Image (cartoon, rainbow, N blue to C red; front, side, top):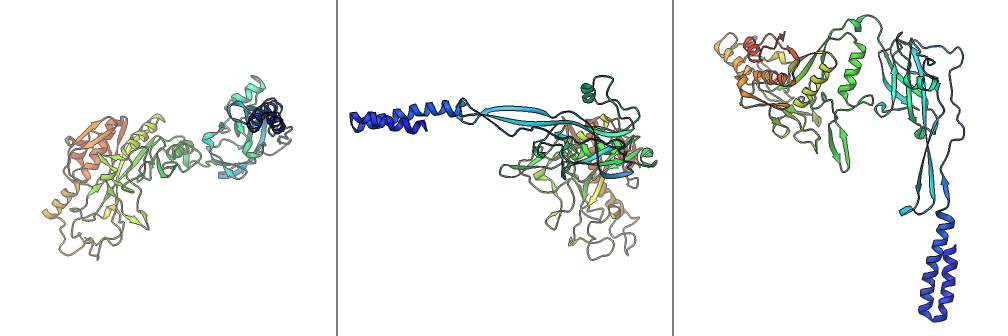
Length: 471
């Protein structure tokens, strides 16, 4: 308002000196009026955002029952402890360069504990707030499994004073520290939890497991691996859960929680067979696609990069299998398993990538080889059940030798966190010897799981540097 008035006054006074004076007077008046407006309306005023006056915090009523849970279920909880909401104030100017009114924004955070059920439980798998799943990796959430020796939560003890905080022994509960409330209307949201509580003796008796899928390019990685999906957009290839930073971490956390007496893990690593005829079958590492856009961690196996690797066949526009785990992800998985106190066995595994319409001669007498057959059907050509079979002949021996290949330990070179292959053979021995060398890079691998029906197994054991084979 002052700008308009001073502008008019300046023009009137300047008009005494003619048209040019009126223009100069209008400009000077506008400048003076702007200064007055900022002083009256901007710099000295403060605009406050929405502020929480009062908040009703729901709590447990006297005599509220404690849930009993068996197996896995999605349940609600009961608020058993809370503090007043924490208020955080931020101040900023609405205009540029410190001009304009000051704006105060208020954010609120809640500290509270939610009782779940009778303990002990194994873990909490997922959490929902007002029906929307939460990314718990971005929250400060502590889980107490409800054991009889659990200690009080440090936040509760800090608020209640040492020695006055309950430990809620025998009750499974969670504590949220500074949960942001702005997305929930500045209130504690309705929370639900997927709780896992094993029952019976099976889980406690498990001592060894086999880790799959085995066919996953980066699924065993302990770090997030991303690829670009478009302009200013990307996806995390090895995270399909909101309970942990990666799929591997989520899987191992649940495995060790559900099977507390676990001792050994066999890590499946898959390469791909291309033919049921032993003499023609090549064993090669494969990828789902020949190129990925700006992959944060390049896929690399046995000296082969993605662009040079065998590409897995397609079904309905997508790969028929996941790819071979990258060497880097295998090393990370081994390190994590050892850090958790587990013995590690590598399990080299052959998956047959023989798609429909392959047109390959069938050793079993069919018009073509069956689509995606079991690896155990690799045989001599013709098969023992067919007329004119090569079984128990020198031809069969030659075919089996071709399948096993002629790679030797001297064909491999170790460097840093990788192993490179200097030969050209693509037989079964190459896969086994590659992982034997990778195991020495990783350190702490306790042995291999391998099929005992393969010819040359004794020599393979010698070439792997003495790693024991579990058959």
